[in-house]
Amino acid sequence: MSLIVQKFGGSSVADAERVMNVAKIVTDTYAKGNDVVVVVSAQGDTTDDLIEKQMEINPDASRREKDMLLAAGEQISISLLAMAIEKLGYHATSLLGWQAGFETSSAHTTARIKRVDASRIQDELDQKNIVVVAGFQGISRYGDITTLGRGGSDTSAVAIAAAMHADLCQIFTDVEGVYTADPRKVETARKLKEISYDEMLELATLGAQVLNNRSVEMAKKYGIELEVLSSMTKAPGTIVKEKPKMEKMLISGVAKDTNIARISVIGVPNYPGLAFKMFSKLSKKKINVDIILQSIGHDGKKDISFTVAKSRGKEAVEVLEDYMINTLGAKEVLYDEEVAKISIVGAGMESHSGVATKMFEALYDAQINIRMISTSEIKISVLIDAADADKAVKAIHNKFFD
Image (cartoon, rainbow, N blue to C red; front, side, top):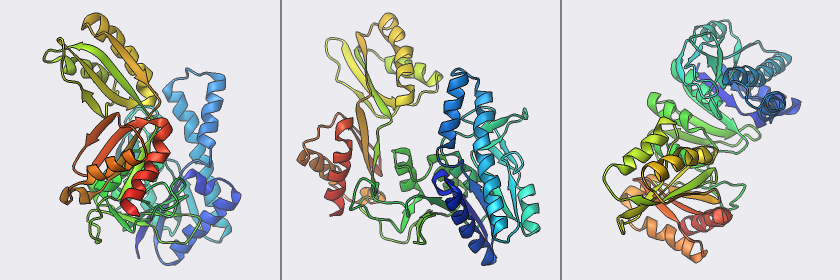
């Protein structure tokens, strides 16, 4: 007998028909002699609908009250799924995050899991129940409900698998696994049988929306084998593990991220320590910086460009404008949201030369201009105009996989 954790996203439980489909998947797994813990997201667009309701009442509501509201979405999902499982003749118990033992930090809307006390879940399993847990939420040391941010249900599922030493953690989505590119955008995208934690983490961080990057980090840390598969078909999925058995591919995938903005600080005085002062201002506001490009100094001045998440872009500009111009003597701060980051990821890069050349050739053939470049051992990212993003992904994918 194995312990299997199964996570289902909002699209998998979007309506009554899909809830019953998920119940069938869960009970089929249970009928094979497995203990099953199910983690469920809010149905369909429920979270977005709740946010709209909040905006109608109070756009400046406290984060605590936002968490209280958003946590309701998963409560609906788990109760409906438990009812569906009961309808199929099996016993099920639904648990909210705090009932399932999720203890988190007190950072409302972006809480981190500190500990999972899985004793209640284990008690229910010992009574031969299927346990249905609300993902995305927990409770702080002050007794307040918290949420984990977007993608938090993936992290919840992996956290349970780690706490209970599960044999497998399955993440059910609306695609059949991890592909070399978004199959909805690139017709020739291929499904991978296996992929390493490091490659999956890079893809998730760089814009691939199959798995949340925090969940991959946790799976790697605790050695939890993940399987990404579809709740709509019975096709085998993609296994995410430490060392895939297959030979390292040159690249494992192409990712696109349009949720970024470019900030350029022009005419910065060219003396030591200025970059530290500038980026420390952003760090204090918890604004993460990604690709950084610094020009060669001229006339005692230099330009520094970097990217941030689009959601934090205007805040970053506000932080820097007064300080950089009035205090440090920069000329101006420019802001551009019409950009996209295109990345290739692959462990095979470490042992193959010419990968960057091949990527740049694909962009040249497609007449796409590169604004900035960033590299690491297993990934290369470029910043381009947002209008060229889909064309760039197709061009690069065709260059490597045709």
